[in-house]
Amino acid sequence: MDSKAFIKALDTIVKEKKISPDVVYEAMTLALQTAYKKNFDSKTNVRVDINRETGEIKVFSYLVVVPEIDEGTETVDEEGNVVEIPPKINIDAQILLEEAREIDPNAKVGDTIEKEVTPKDFGRVAAGTAKQVVTQKIREAEKNSIIEEFQDKEFELMLGLVAMEDAKNYYIDLGRTRAILPKSEIIPGESIKMGSSIKVYITKVESGSKGPVIMTSRKHYGFVKRLFESEIPELQDGEIILYGVARDAGNRSKVAVYSTNERIDAIGSCIGEKGSRIASILKELNGNMVKTNDKDNVGERIDLILYDEDPKTFIANALSPAKNVIVNIKDEVKKEALAIVTDDNLSLAIGKKGSNIRLASKLTKYKLEIKTLSQINREGNQD
Image (cartoon, rainbow, N blue to C red):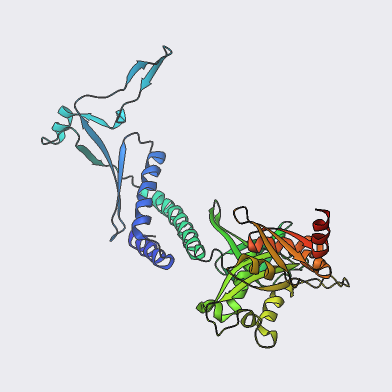
């Protein structure tokens, strides 16, 4: 390949890959300087000049004009050892002022004396080096481009294709790159099939040694939050606010919402006409569930909770499906509260393995204690 063809090919790649030509030429210049020193055993300073119009490459050796040759010095450290201090300038790249003036009468200390030293077969070296540099720059540019693209997708929902699987992870094809979905981050009880479309929540985007690393989850509470935002238009336009989500993936989620428009029912809007909106969300959460004969294994449930600024009301709502809950705030600073329920509502308030009270506590950010009216009466009589 001649010089002009080389430059044309290089410019084409730069345009296609959207890489700054300055970045590529600067990297090539440095790489060619290193290549010259390595292949031609040069101890002097060298400068490489690349003509961007013709593709011609020239190598110049240069010496720095000095008043005297700096060969370095010696000193003694605190322990009495002789320590060498290297010269500030490579000794092979120095030239005395009087010698420099024999070449250039106007030479001054600090000037450089150049001489072209371009080898006859340097084009071969240059071509090989250029290929390596361009390949590396393309990889770096694509890597940075992908990271920039997906950084904006962090904490967002994306649709991908299940492309590969190993012992610990699924790999989700997102178009320009693949994301990692750890098996520990899928919804408990679901089965992921190769080649199927799947929604994932992006939890982290970072640069790795081999390229972008994109971590995803279907277990994260943010997954449920983004599902609601994608299905409920009123959440997108701000007429309904999603206050918070507490999730026990595969079992139950509690989603607190409230309306900024008194004419809009926040809970009803999330449910949708004939339950259409909440059904779409539940389908996404439970559509991949493995079918069993276990009656308790019906997939993830969603409790829609009406948020209230009054913590007593909010806590009572959060303990749904328990009803007629009386709440007493024990300590506002420590966020401690007592919930009093009827005997027949106790198991509902606590939930299976304590899941209901645990999620209510997480949603309201209060440490909750539950007692029945019977317990309260007995304790009162004992006092």
